[in-house]
Length: 370
Image 1: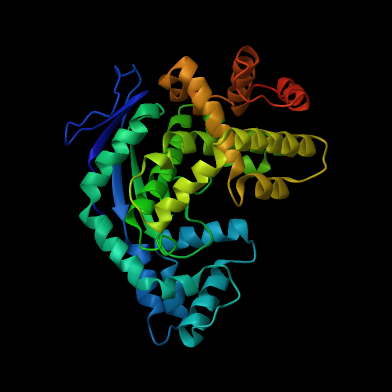
Image 2: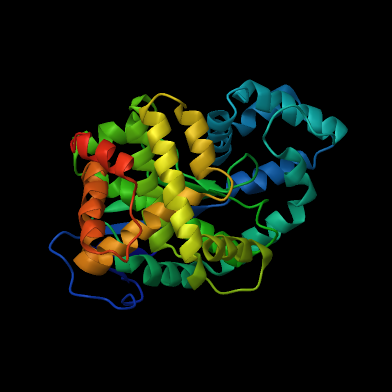
């Protein structure tokens, strides 16, 4: 790992202390401040490329890959989306792919790693060379809406494989995020955009750590009622989308263009209305027991990530009225409170998209507690 520069976080500001660099539009720091140290680990991506290029891989050698923190996390996250993919499946698939170069049974994207292995290693070199500048850019972007945190160290693991572009593990005792490189088409700008979004999730987690009830809620999210899972996921993804707006990321590459295009498609007035209607539909079906959380997640947060943009619009509206520091405490409060705040604001401002009457009734009857 490469030790990171220390970054100071406050409610609406972020400064890279080693450079003395204030964020854009910095305001006076709030009374609750913390520090975050970023550390980068490239070993998972490098080890996967090295292993997949071998002429043969024994079972002990394949199993030893799981001792790497990033590789183990990639396998664990894959099993969340596709439960049949276990560590044992990974070992079998690695051996099979190295021997045959044919797509195995699992969902670990081993064919992608092999096909784009040169791109992965090139990205590792580029990212290593640009760490300082990348930290400064991220500081300027996330500093405007940084949640309040205690002093923390965040580890960024660059991985290869799996089903996710980037992720934070639920219930992870380490403050860490994971970014897949084989999906990036060799586009470093797109990797930085992905990293920025996922880093905001880690800051949400660090902020929530101030409240034991918030920690317990997040750690047991899969056991929460489906409506609470919907509200929490919309809050967490929407605010990360808002703070790490891909339209601010420069570069012509295909990966960063994919992130930007998703924003452009979802932020037209017509699409915003349609996305709010989708939220209404998902929430009412969950409330009436006509669908389950897995199906609801797929509809709202799968292809197109449409409900990310519902949460983003809510965050934009609330911070425009209450100030950037509104998000300073949002993640230490029950998600229902975020929705209640938006209901009140949208009732007073007819220019804002509104939830349906059915949705409003459900939200008003949900407890605003953990």
